[in-house]
Image (tube, rainbow, N blue to C red; front, side, top):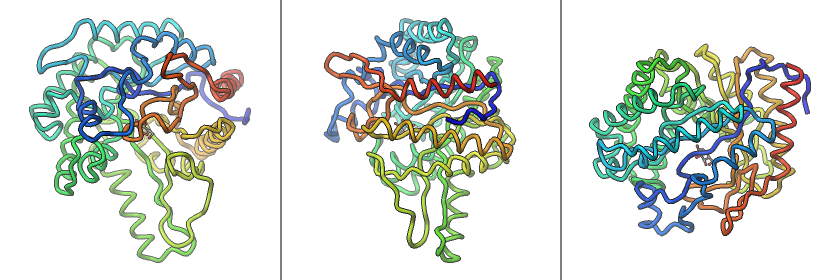
Length: 388
Ligand code: BGC
């Protein structure tokens, strides 16, 4: 793998997870109810019991010579009812963050990764300004409490995905299908981010952003003029509208890259992963270049493949890191890369059938089984560290 990549010594090499997808027993969340109400094929249940096994998971990460971990705190656990904070839960996250530090792992912490406390969801979720105010208080609490243990702060994960899945397609909580509501949510989330940003800033934190789903809209060779125009409009709405006139509220930009959307006849045919997605590593390079214009440090906060063929995963990582390197050569200020995901986990409405992990989990015993890709990814990171 590309020894030639020049990365600064403090480049973050890590893997990502989210609380709801891994911790388990998150009963107080809108997702828990959604799983039951919609009779989803899998129930998150104990998930992969990261709540109890975080030490082992962090050990595996550190043992593979990686130096960073993206994880999230679960609002529904920290604030189980409106205005009540659970000290034991806060202490739990203290311990997780302290343990990561002890193992030499720097943390990228997400405050909100899709799931809401039930009480907040029942009051209209993020569409309700009073709930956004509560989140602001929550951000303030987390900021003050955890500021010395976190390197990068992500206020929210993928706002555009959240609003499409939850409010336009109805495939996630709250299960709505309304274009108008989706537009309201868009503005509510911009407001939410600003509020959280200010809270974290007041706590003296300086590396704050969101994890933005980046999609490349690529006209095919024989695409018409209209398709080129559509690609431009989609690019603006999906990739940039969230940042439009908001740049001052983003210190860094997190990029979650999975997909290239081809517009026009004869889109390239490639092997699809278990999500049905075609891998296009060049799209990562394009995504990084796309967000360069904000002149902020960029972090790849997610990139990964759902497959049971671990060779394919190793190839995927290599190809995407080459793309990252190419973006760097062209001037992108990339400072970290997080593979999604550290663990096979609860892939939302798909349940446990889609496996992105570097580590497999036997869900009966919860035994962790590192896949060869964990070591392979760690080796690549190590080569970077050696040559940096
Ligand atoms: C989300 C993750 C999810 C992954 C794979 C991202 O959109 O942040 O929660 O598991 O993609 O679908």
